[in-house]
Length: 458
Image 1: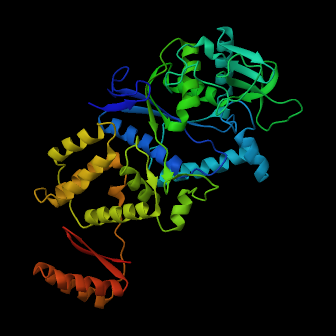
Image 2: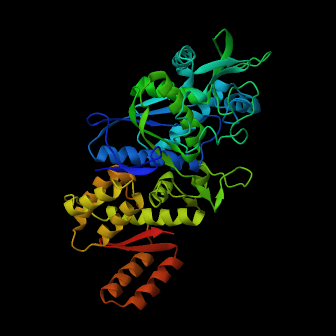
């Protein structure tokens, strides 16, 4: 039994698919106007863990992820410049070039993080017809209205608006993330289709409703998720910043079009902090995968760090915590590389692992179980290796593809390692520590595993 925290009900619920073992999963993907950062990686990795847990439990997941390459306005509401258009102007390129450039980088980072590929990656610009059709239906049903700068959704016609975020129509006021527009019927009304400003020639615009314009941010996810997953599906993920207004608006417009419940379970990842602060370029703590690699870390070191935190907790990234994750991952890799044969999956430990991951994706406890099993003298190393390979279907650390790195070890270091092995067998720990220090002075480090000592360059 899988249990998940549902933002919609604010409780942990037993996961029950709509029908059978086929699951629909929609992930809010990147807005491709700039480099994706480690906060994005945290969010996408949690969605990956969710998918892997479902598949480990025998479900068949159809994973759909959008790419916002038009319509994401700088204020995330209904005013301001489109982020793609703004980035294109600043960089002296076309909006289409900007979108392709940053999408390629994002997809490369997904591979580095060992994220499973969605079966459908859909661009907003490829689904303009579907969005226009949804807006037409909302107009016909009386849920939408036109004013001078666009077509808006009338939130007063959808009494459940605010249920996901906990807001109410009465409590929501203008300001903050809701832009002031005197023509709107209600301060909470949001744009479905934005008209191009008079005298403005946008790079991305389409003719609809008698004028040139472009879609609002929210409508794209409704149009594409319904196209590929149906009018009702199981799971929708995103960061906690997506709860309001983005996901709130998705629910309102989708259910107003179909008359059916939109998504059964909503999962949201909390913000990633950096040194206890919110990540921002102004604080110079805005890090990308490339920044990590420049300091000698890999994306899989970051993935290991993500495993140490629960998706509903606020992970605080520090270079020290990433370094600890790198060391722990190397220890794990060295343990596996030290075992030549693979045995059988340990049933007892597998049951415990299932229990951890099925309890609202408790990855920290699942990771703790990895080290508990490694230290367990009652399980053979061969069975440990087989079990770890099985668990990696969820952990995603790419353990089956590890390659032993052959390094040239000077004879002096080899002799010290052999001498230290003798000291350890004789339980002469003082001598063992002394020899470890001598090895370190020569530029090498030695790690002790159940399969023996492993020597690496410092």
